[in-house]
Image 1: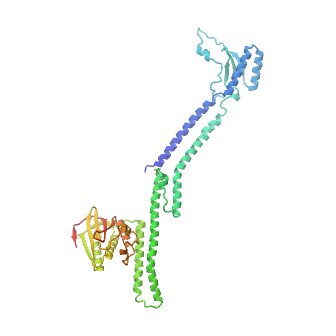
Image 2: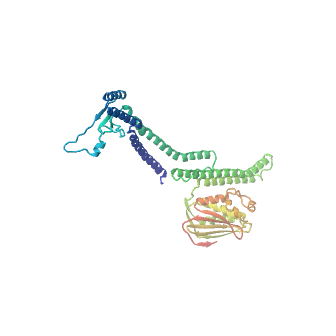
Length: 454
């Protein structure tokens, strides 16, 4: 088995896991990046403080600047100062333009803040002269990353849990949808809807569950066929039993009324025998239909079997001409003497029954590839072309000419076909051009011998 469902689930889990790791990594880095900058409003507040300090400094009012710094420190619970940074190069060195432009005593308000440092950084707003700076320790209320613990909790717990739940829901839906269809079909089938099927409902799906649906459909088709066959057999059997039971009831009523029972006993015995044969044939047919047995347990000589059956037929139908062309021997291995004997006897009797008095029946056995071809032809009325296949249906009687023949219940050919098929062969019926019916059987065989005329 290709295990398509296994690989589908593995692929889904692998893709979902990789997607989860990527999303966590991406969102983690993006979240930390966004949280590392001071909010725009706070940046503007720091810049406003710097401009205020610069204004007071340029005004030369150090007392006012001192009072403002003191008030700011008390209000924000932080440290603030205005300082100069006159950097003097030594040993004939000089300050590069890059250094002079980027030199700061603290951090620019637009720079990233290290979220994992415990102390708040010192922010630097440089005055226009480039040497005077307003310094302030970033107030706690302006420190970015206040929601970092909650973000980490979301990324490490809530997000993986959400993704895994979605992944499980996808897998559950993928697996359970066909199982629900199968459950529904099973319930409908158990309630008597024998025509329900599942595979067509799964569309183009092709995995183990689709194979399970196909197996269910095959089981439902075979089980439904068996149930319908049993119903039909029971209905047909009950119908066929009504006539002999009615005759028996009439005969018993006559006996109860005191009529002479000597001429009624043979009829009662005959009706009982007919019902016994009918029930036995029906049970045999039901067994062959239900169990589909393979009757391949013994070897036999088909020529000897046909000789014996033809001898019985000549005795039973002395007014018929039974012609045969058989090989000296026709050994069949792994077959069933009883099944073939009953099947061929039914066909020969059927041919004799519908052949008029003085007519001929031909039996021919020829070697074929890996088997034997047996043909039994009669001079009866034949069968309408549309009914050639239906004559192998239980309790089916063909044309009106054959319906008028007594003594049959339409089980012989049905039994014959199933018995021949159980031994590995097949049987077909065709009409002869000269009139009558030709039954053609193919039987698997072993050793072949030259033909002889009888």
